[in-house]
Figure 1 (tube, rainbow, N blue to C red):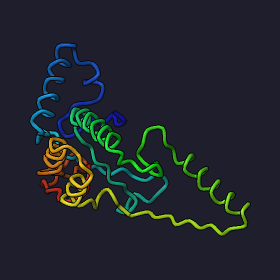
Figure 2: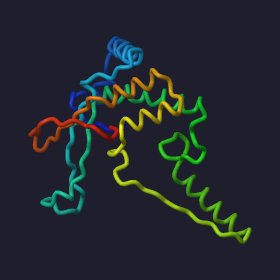
Figure 3: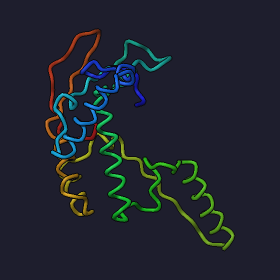
Figure 4: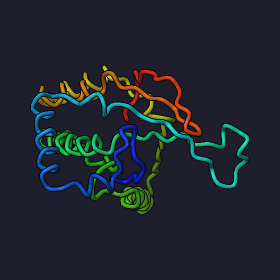
Length: 194
């Protein structure tokens, strides 16, 4: 868990790490039940949005703040388990493109850059032209179409149980903003991934 901040449920990483063995056993049973029933608890679907001031920028200008979404740290543990299952199924079905380096274990941007340089140098040695197109979709994670994602999972032959779990994970998510301990009204999240 990267974030040390407690999410909307108030559970910090430290408190989870210090749970007694009996509580961890219970939490494991809860996670297993969630996976078996393809259910992601509503309490872990709420996001608390806070604003972080960008260093060296004028604090009176709204654009000089970066929104940060704080999620339940307990929910993040279940997310990691789900991610592992997603990755396993991708690997099992051969759906991972060899050229996909982003968000993959043991695949870094440096490695991808080296592959690009090698490609260019190889073409140059053969006196051939080479080209590259780089694409960056602004706010890509914020714009993910839920139904389209689920459709793609069906096309890629993910298990029905994992598709149902992801559907439940994405449905009925909410967020609120908090500034100076003042909480806004809650709003629905209808696109994007946490």
